[in-house]
Image (cartoon, rainbow, N blue to C red):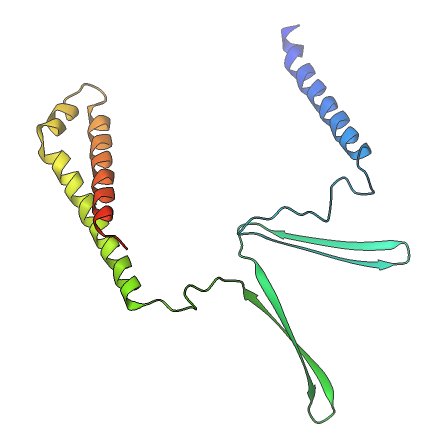
Length: 171
């Protein structure tokens, strides 16, 4: 009896999954089981839906790129040349938000450098302080987990030093 329990349970699970899927598909409002007009996107994703209808035949193409920046399509038409032919140019650009009209001032760049330098120096000082105190020796002498406690204390002290160093630079 015990040896038939797991296969029976897996079989019931597969049957239940099939019934659940069929009930979802049968309750859809239209011909599709999901709303094609509302494709879920985030700040770093892009969705595109194209369709063409030829009589009763509907061709649908859905492209959904996760973790990619949204792009914008720029089209231009130029007429001219030796045969008055219309040329179409399509370029795809990554959409961006310019910072202060796309200008980074030298003061802002210097502030970024100073803050990074202060954080790294604070991290070094915080790690050195915990290593040079008697607390480090006490933590490392704890049986079995001493090495882990010492490294966690050093990491926490480094993080605190980094935060303190970053707070000194205000920009």
